[in-house]
Image 1: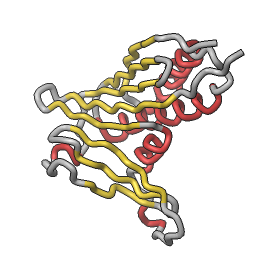
Image 2 (image 1 turned 120 degrees about the horizontal axis):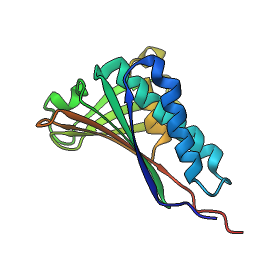
Image 3 (image 1 turned 90 degrees about the horizontal axis):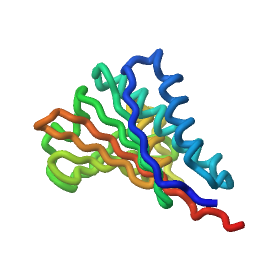
Image 4 (image 1 turned 30 degrees about the vertical axis):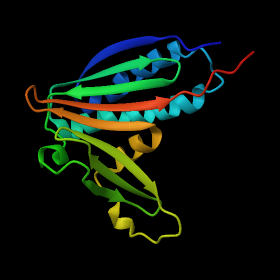
Length: 180
């Protein structure tokens, strides 16, 4: 059993009523291209959560007419990329210096941070809280980003000022295939 190299590009209208059908198309493609179903349930859950949140954030915040999702599968990762020409993520356009770590939200179990990698990229990071009594009021607008970050090996946002393209990239690590 093995995972096939594959890639596919989807374009969807950016409205809430298209969420279910858009999600279904992408998940069907992922399922078709994972040959080793010994780990498919975990991967299915993670990819479904990531794609749901990326599409939801698209129609809630981006304001673009369409969103694009690309899926690339190789033996180590499923890479999910969402692009649109909507409103950019505020931390990138704020001009924060490289390395700036900004807390976006928190709850009783996690802190979600955005780290400025450079003038156009932000990497999301989740830190688990152990034995801390954090105020539940920190759960807010960025809860979807927390979900994506927890489900991903790596989650990065990029904004291209020249083209106005927003790019969110999430990588889900695939375990080695089971040997028969």
